[in-house]
Length: 103
Length: 507
Image (cartoon, rainbow over all chains, first blue to last red; front, top):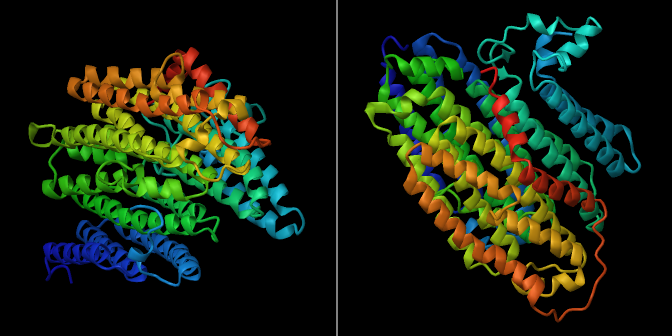
C-alpha cells in the first residue's frame, strides 16, 4: 500500500483530521460532541503513528497506538461518567450553561 | 528476584499495592474507609523508604546491597552505572532524579490522605476509592519522573490525569466540583491530543521514542526537521496545559477552586511537580540540540516569554481575587512560572533549583490548602478574604501556621520559598536571562501584597463572627509535616540541594 501512496498523503490526511478535531473542540458547545472531537484528534495521531511506523519499518509506533487506544477507552469511561454526573445535577450537557465558576 | 524489579521497586510496589487496595476493598465489608486509609498510608510510607533505598542503586546502603546479603540480588558492584541506569529495556530510568521526585510525590500523598480523612468523614463521603485513587495518582506521577521513553511518559501522564479528573469531581453532588471536573476533563483530554501528536511527530522525525536515542538523532541529520520543530512545539503545548502555564492556564483557577480543597492541595502541588518532572528530561536531555535549531535559541526564548507572562498574569490576577482559595489557585499558576525559569536556564543550577523549589512549593502550598480545608470543617464554608478577619483570635495556631506558609510563598527568608526562588533566579542570571530575573523579582514583589494582605486580615482586623471550635484531627499531622518541611528546607537548604545534585551523579 505504502509503496503506491507516499507517506506525505497520510501525514496530510491526519493533520487535516487533527485540525478538524481541534476546530470541533473550540466551536461546539455540547460536551459529548467536544469529547467526540477529542477522540478524532487521538485517532488522527494514531494514523500518523502507524504511517511513520510502516514507513520506517519500526514497530514502536504501532505499539504506541495500542496504548493510545487503551487510554482513550479509559478516558471515555471517566468522561462519560462526569457528563452523566453533570446531567443529573443540571439537566444539561452544554458547556456554556455550566458557569458557576468563572471561566 | 529479577534485578530490574528490584531497581524499579518503588514504582512496582506502589502500582501493585494500589491494585491490591481495590481487592482488599472487595474482601472487607465493614469499615472499609478506615482499613484502606491505614493501608494506603503504610504503602506510601514504604514507597518513600524504597525510593530512598534505590536513590543510589550501586551504594552499599541501597536496596540492592541489602538484598544481595540474602542472595536475592547480585552484588551492587556488578551494576553497570556508566551513564543513565535504565531497566525494562530502557523504558524506565532508576535512581537519582526519579527517586527524588518519588519522595516529593509520596510525601504529598501522605499529607493529602491524612488531611482528607477528617474532611471525608465530615462530608459522609468516606469511600475507600479516594485513597486508592491517590495511590494510583502517585503511581502515575512516579512513572512520569522515571520515564526514559515517550511511551512510559505518556502512560504516566494519563494515569495521573485520569485519576485527577475523578478526584476533582469526587463530591459529585456538589455543583462546583462536577463543573470543575468537567472542565478539567475536557481541557485535559484536549491537551493529551496535542501531547501525543507532538510525540508522534518527534517519533517520525527521529525514528525513536527513547530519550537518549532522540538526543543522539537530533545531533545528526534529521529526516524531517520541520516535523521535529512542530512536534516539539506541540509537546510543549501539551505539557504547558498540564503544568498550567500561560496561555493555557485558564482552567487552573476554576478547577482548583471548584474541586474539594484536599484534592486541590494534591493536584496543585504534586501534580505540578510531576508535570515539571516530565518537562525537564525532554528539554534538557533529549532535545538540547533541537533547542538551538537553526543556530538560534527560538524554543528557549519562547519558554522564557511563557515563563515571564505566566508569573505576571498569575500574580496580577491573584491580586484582585476576593476568594482565598481562588487567590491561591492563581498564585500556583505564578509559581509554575518561577519553576519554568529553571528550564529556561537549562543549566545544572536551574535543574537543582527546580527540584529544590518543587519540594518547598509542595510543603507551603499543601499546607495552606489544608488550613483552608480545616477552616471549612469548622463552619467557615466560604473562603472570602473577610472571613479570615480576626482569625488570629479565633484559631491562633492556624493563623500562625498560615502566616508561615504565606511568608514562604512570598519568598521571605528564612523560609524555604526564599531559597527556592534564590536558586532559580541565580540560575537564570547565569544563563544570561537577566531580563527574566527582573520580571520574576517584580512579580514576586506584586505577590507580597496579597500574601501579606491575608496576614493583615488575620491579625489586624476584627471578626464579626462567633467563635467555633476548630478540630484539625489528623490534618494536624500534615500541617506539622509541612511546617517542618518549610523550616528545615529554609534553614538547611544545602542538604536538599546536595541531594538534588547527587541525583544526577550517575547520569
